[in-house]
Length: 345
Image 1: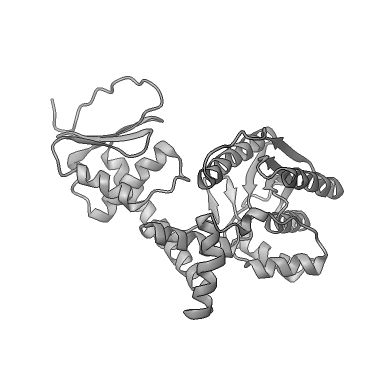
Image 2: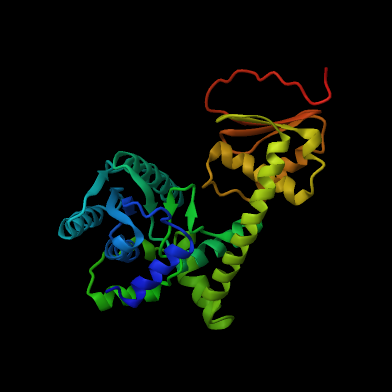
């Protein structure tokens, strides 16, 4: 018999079709040992038959917090052993991730994503479930607003992405998750770095959100999460328009370059142009890249010239000619692409 919290998670999974085929295929839970990922693992195990999935776990030890990281790994191993499920574990060498605190956080995230994808391939998992929840959603949206974002950025964290990543707890708040863990007597680990306000994201969590709740809007979590949901629905509609427009403009697409027909591109509304540019960047650098409006506007300004180019990132360049625009990911040599524009003989 499922508890109320567990039923609500199942309802969210069903509503957003996170596990649509119910074929009993493997779902890999990203297990850090923290409360959110432990709650996620517990619920998916209990509801596995109902959702039509089997569950395994994966844990990456970043070796960033000395003995604390080792204790997190041991906790995850013991937890999965007690539950009778397989866990894939990888441990990075101490000092393997270096840099400033923010750059370390970014590098750790990228390594964790790569590890989880590889583990999913090895274990033949069809989905990777992460413990992102409602408070993460609010923090993400506020972070993007402060940094500068467009309407797509307001959609925040999506319930699912790339037919691989799923977030079954995204409709649940941190307090509700902690209450569930306490009621069920389920142990978990606390990550001390989550309290370190040197990180910008933690300042939003521990300083900005409490200020907004106490001085401006006690229901800010609900308000911002509703904004994200409405933005996601509108973004899904715009994505269909964007894909159609991109296909109409695209002269060539592969993993390192995209060529657009400039004459067709400039006829679109500015909003569609912005979305086509974002789409091109995500094709070349991955759907998870955090594109901001400054990048988009920088590229868009090139289209007003007969010729011009700009470095967008250290590995991505955009160039515009009289009739053609090129997006190039500078990772390896590539062959020139012969073009024959419409109307040419």
